[in-house]
Length: 538
Ligand SMILES: Cc1cc2nc3c(=O)[nH]c(=O)nc-3n(C[C@H](O)[C@H](O)[C@H](O)COP(=O)(O)OP(=O)(O)OC[C@H]3O[C@@H](n4cnc5c(N)ncnc54)[C@H](O)[C@@H]3O)c2cc1C
Image (cartoon, rainbow, N blue to C red; front, side, top):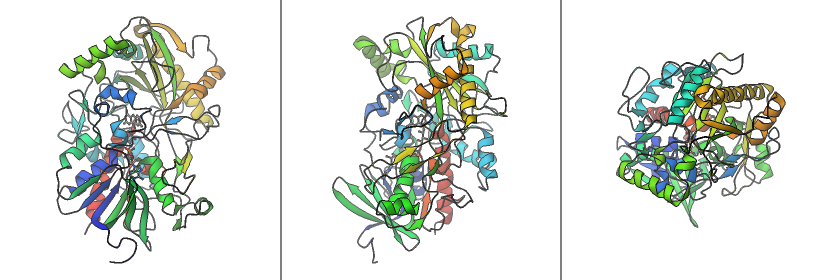
């Protein structure tokens, strides 16, 4: 062996990133024992208790030990604000810090991917992978799976406000829906979460833990991959650093980039795959001029309203002061119940807010807490937050490196609310959300709307509020989009176009964001991607 990977450790598969997709891949690719697999993760092992206690979600927004804590570029349609862009930087990736909500998206989302030319990605094609991944505590049916690695559960204790929210949505004319991942997504109900017995089921817990003892799987945490190595048009290995120690590993079969929607295009660009002018401006030798790498960033923007409640039964109250925290902690320690098992958001309603929409375009949810800043202190009074996510945003942006230094954050520009349709839809959705909170079943719990406030009555003011106070629901995708056109980065088998031995398998390959939360779909992509890799392995 000679060249850049001479004397390197040799594996069949190298997986860069132990996130939602990376953990699935590590499990499936090492299962037969026939392949040597290296899994590299930039962040640490997932030992800290807050990574396992569901309510830890709120603690992890600003924790740089486990979160890249990115921010977007100033967003022109959001008063020039930089919007937070958290991403997991820990074994389990974003599935270790996310809000635990399990929603796959609509069948039409995947049929749309197929219509864009991606054979094998219609809903009928991907449903078996969703089912294979899942261990739904309600058991299996035509849509749902049981016995898979990912635990999916109902709320341990249905909160009275969550039940009131569902009733209020019904009073507004929306149907009750007991399974958002069943035959239809439309309507109101309680969310299921990726949890088992009150403990978070990240991809690390569900997929990696059972595979850890395999002799053919090596996991290296705190290892930042800095470059993919090529021999001609074949990926042959990677360079990575652990502390100040620079290392090289060789891949006999494939390098699989699973670093997430911000870091996968970053790594490709650092390795010379990207827009030639960008790479040249930073002094990076161009391996392939690929304008699509990093292009097309598509993310969920949400309007958020806040309400003060009458009774002290919200999470603001449950964890207030030392006595509240101690009581919640003890209850969790002894029963795995109570405030610490509550996911980010507990109840929701999928609605068609825009008259042109054939399927739900807005996810109107309620969180059982309120505070001035996301991830900051909760209000010192009872409060809840209404969140309306724009499910199928037309707006697209980009991810571009700003430096040849792999430790520097890339520019993240989702271009929120760039189209008139997006602005119209989110405005219509937030109006639905306000109606639900004003329906009798919720109104009896609400003392006042504190943001934007009852005085905000006309559309211009409400849209201005959404631009000023709205945020992401953390579902960026599409920066290494699969497709058949010139700007597509991967083909429908997730191979980087024009290269051999190189795939991207994570949320970044989605042609468009799904109409729901993205962890379930990313796990599905990991499952399907693993089958493709194994089918092509010699
Ligand atoms: C705060 C938050 C809340 C969310 N809430 C929900 C929710 O409730 N429900 C839901 O379905 N989805 C939710 N999501 C989204 C969902 O978790 C993600 O879409 C999904 O986890 C993405 O998976 P991934 O494999 O693409 O990337 P990730 O899971 O982010 O994994 C990428 C991994 O690669 C590592 N990495 C990156 N660069 C390198 C490198 N150069 N070298 C080595 N390793 C590297 C990262 O550290 C990370 O661990 C949320 C996300 C966040 C951040």
